[in-house]
Image 1 (spheres, each protein chain N blue to C red):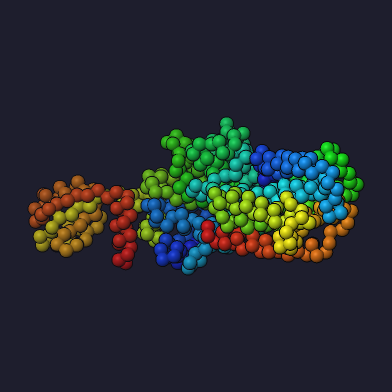
Image 2 (cartoon, rainbow over the protein chains, first blue to last red):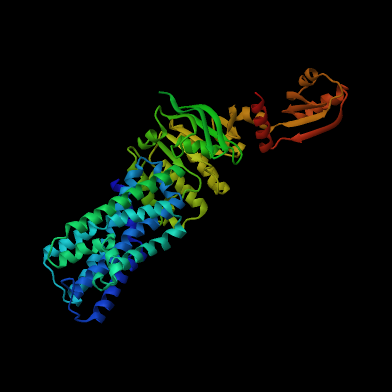
Length: 243
Length: 297
């Protein structure tokens, strides 16, 4: 399993497209949006620059975590996953490695947007806050990794990419990553608080505010992790039975 | 245990279509066996069940005494599938190294690369290979773990003549180490040249099982047919070159391994006959006649 993980990590590093979507784009949007908002004060008890930092990091993490579905879908179509199934590697190990890779893709946007926030926008945190931010947003991306896997094991490659994009944008918009929940219309705002994307970003907003994430939010995120996990397991079994 | 593979009354339906229709077979360790049959005969379906990729609708499949999946997880099986693709963004060498890492007792990397004629391509990206090169990589991936049973589905498709020869030479060396090899093909020549035993499959059933020479005799002959005008079928059966004689209405059908001698005898002995026809049995026709006779039994 370690050999497979290393093999996959090496492939991941060679994929430049991923870096564009998970690092360059979030950093760019962050730079533009935090620059245009100026010193607008605070959102939800956090400085705007820090608030937007978490929003964009969360957006990049979503893109990264869901991207695993695109790879899975392609490898399913071209027969690579089938080839792996006739090696001693257990299919569950393959799925576990894919989920781990997906969650690891949540880290570069958090780190890169965080660095820009610290150096360009003067957002400052303690070392403990940095560690908490990266670790929480890494673990918090697992529901989205499961969502990506569910899509990848269900859809053909030509559909996985657009549907993933739709999923990312839908979750990001409705979850308040582009427009803060505080300024959303009432109905949308109440939907947002039930979405995993909002509760995922809440982990980061809590850290930058120097608080522990609220238990209710963690519970909602965990529930989504179970839902997406079950969906991914079902999709995986179904695709294995078809082949 | 001396048995590598055992299939008992194995059947597979795809919806209403019966792709495999009750196959029984046993393959001893160390044998090189060809699964010969036309496209759509059920070869790939049989192989996929043997590898645990498909569940049979009925019957049991055993590989080294356990389920196919158990044998695969234990690293006893290596397989080369048709049309299987590889991960992009990795090199030939990395893929071989991965395969080696997954098995307990792999072959050395250099040996695998040399056997599959990939030494010069070791650093090449997998998505930058030609069809024939990709086929060689599939072979390398199947071989790298040094499995006890090597299963190859149409291994020489997409290979040019030269690579084909190199491929079979490598296969022979591998089989000579006492490993069991099962390959599917629709070329009788390949089956005859490289297998100890040829199992012919048509319409999801085993229609013949024997040495390459046996199968060639069954399938390589010609059929001489004529309106027999009262001549006794037993007399016709005893003509030189006749393997089998049968009657369809007024017509006698003689399956011959030497039709020239049969026809000469037919002329010389003064038998009454009309409307003589000699037809060569192509492999496809031979398969069909074999299935037809299997159906009657």
